[in-house]
Amino acid sequence: QVQLVESGGGLVQAGGSLRLSCTASGSIFSFYDMGWYRQAPGKQRELVATITSGRTTNYLDSVKGRFTISRDNAKKQVYLQMNSLKPEDTAVYYCNRPSRWLNWGQGTQVTVSS
Picture 1 (cartoon, one colour):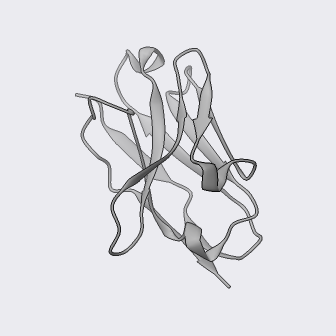
Picture 2: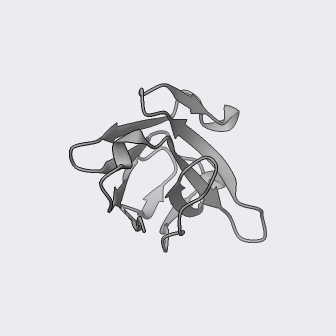
């Protein structure tokens, strides 16, 4: 069973940057499409960015031009570079497949202060 571990969150001022990492176990990671989700307090989890096994990317409109998703299959990692952060980006961020979810990790908290 693939395990997902997210890291890299923290407290940052508006306009700042963070880079999130997700490390996966399992030998078939490179075949998976992957995504980053976020869940703000009192809101549903939303899919922020996706990257296919062929490295095609897609983004939620509200993060286009600010966030970049990438992957390193040799390291079994997926990254989310977040620039020009806004207070509304505050949430717990998770990685997982866009569909047929794996077990969810604990997520990493991102807090953006105004």
